Image (cartoon, rainbow over all chains, first blue to last red; front, top):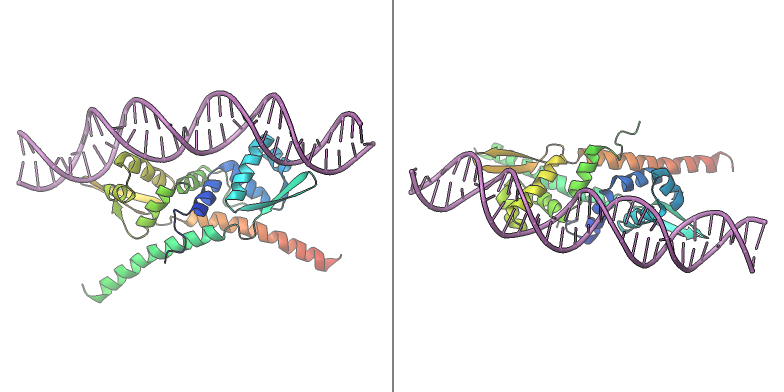
Length: 111
Length: 111
DNA sequence: CTGATACTTAGCCAAAACGGAAACTATTGA
DNA sequence: TCAATAGTTTCCGTTTTGGCTAAGTATCAG
C-alpha cells in the first residue's frame, strides 16, 4: 500500500517549496486571491528575479499555477494545492494510530 | 485572526524538518513504531552523526520526541506531530474557499 | 518607431545544508 | 578493570540556497 511514499520526487518538491518563509508568505497572499509576479515581489520586498525563482519552485511543487497574458504573469493557487500534503499526513497518522490499536488489542486479548 | 502565520519560527522549523527525504523516511519508520538512533541510521544507510543531526532537526520541529535510557536513545512520533501542519493547511484552504463564496454571492446578487 | 513596463536570463556571492571521519563520553558486560 | 557498545562533539568539504545586479526579451502606450 503506502499511497504517498516519502521519497517521491513530487513529495520532495512540494515539501521543499513549503520550507521557505517567503514562499509560504506568497501562498498566504495567493490564498486570498490571484496576484501578478511584480505584485508579489513588491509585497515581500524582494527583487523580481528572487520572486521569480520562489514562484517557480512553488509552481514546480504543484502548489500554485500561473498564466501569462500579455506581458504580465498571474499566479494563483493550484486547484488541488494541498491534496498531496493532506494525503501524506493522513497516511502517517493512520499508521501511527494502528500502533495503538494493536497495543489495545494485545492488552485486552491476553496479558 | 490568522491562527497559523506562515512566518512563525515554529512553522519554519516544522516545514524545514519535513523538507528532506531522509528525514521524511525517518518519520515513515517512526510512524510504524519507536526506534533507536543507530537503528534509524542503519536503515537509511547513513552515518550516526548525520542521523543525529536529522533527528535533532525533526525533534526541534516538534515532529518527534526522544528519551535516553541507559546508553540508547529511543525516538518516537510526537503526540501531536501533525497538528500544526493540519491547522496551517486548514487555514489556507478556508481563505481560498472564501474567495469562491464571495464570487458566488456576487454573481447571484446583482450582475 | 520609441519609450516605458513586466518579466526573463545569466552570473555572482555569502550563508546554510548534508554528509562524512575522527575523537570523546557514557554505559554495559565479562 | 577492560573492552565493546551507543551516542555525542568537532571539524571539514561539497553542494544547494536565497539574494542581488546587470543585461536581455516581449508587450503596450503614445
